[in-house]
Length: 219
Image 1 (cartoon, helix red, strand yellow):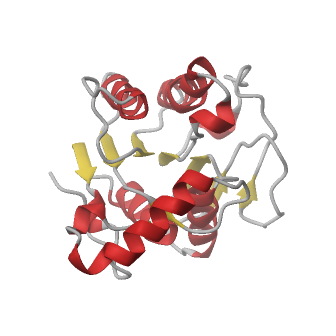
Image 2 (cartoon, helix red, strand yellow):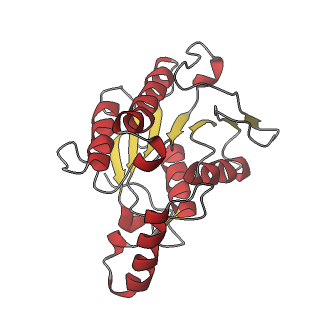
């Protein structure tokens, strides 16, 4: 299968890319990005501007698209800029990929994604899920992690503080509130893309904290 991956330079996306390139079930990976990625014989990585995506490029057609694009309010600088990265870019990518015939979409979303949420972050994730459901994919999966565990290129003090609290409280916390390792999330994204079960599905955070996470999405 050919995989289209957007967000390959981020924490979860970099794990997806490494797993995909090592997986014999995936013949090639197209990973458009804003900066260069390490060369690999099965990787095509065109540099793109997400404000002006090359809609006619042939690499949009794939067996599945995995989207791990995302930022934080602090990094984005404003709610408008955050919405552009976490909503507008992923939706544009999905629409173009679908127009090129890509049948399957898998999104790295978030626990609590809800269009009615009082929290801006969760509301934007919910709006993206809602609108992706209208794009027309044969198979659509939302992977909804809680706090993501792993080393990022950028410093996120809020996440580090929360991670320390969650690690200390892990023995007494419900599974859905525990830290979800980035590698587990990446594995769930790839399995959903390869499985491509028809219809819309959700992989909740409680299925992502165990090292052996590899389960099919819930119907």
